[in-house]
Image (cartoon, rainbow, N blue to C red; front, top):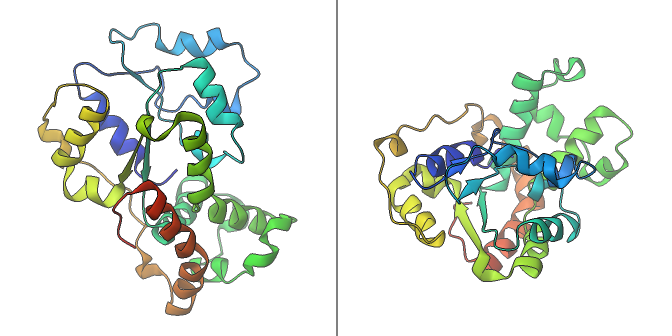
Length: 236
């Protein structure tokens, strides 16, 4: 979530040998595992290609163990996992503005971003208020290291590609060449790769220096460990 999945989904589906399901985000393995697998398969009935995409960020965001990656592996043993990430502080900022401008809960209307992140992180796990719940979610979704380990333990390194959001933004053609090669497909170039529309409101410039430092000290140690084990090159 807020890592660039929409842009990546559009880029993948521009390839003539890749199809999307009926939805970009189906969320079967995270939100609807109680439904029969035939329900999930029905989302791909009209795909003309053998290569189909389900771009559900919740498969990674909700992974608190190996359950979700194991369910995916069981349903699609030859699945290729593509993870796109961004600097976690920028991701946290984008998540906050997504909630404020898109979801628009009444309780968040009068809360400014620096006020929100000035809450004590140590008590966010209690989730006894809407503010604590959202803060916990934003911080957890902005940590990659442990969740990546869960996926790597199930799929192995050769079935996972990690991409950096900023690299897709700066070098879309090069990034998609790498992605198509990972999928075993011929390269495909599209002029639309440079026309991506990114959501606004994700810049860290909205943060006071004190709040930026607070988020950075909390999130960047995890990010550095993640970059080390994943090998991704991503600005921080």
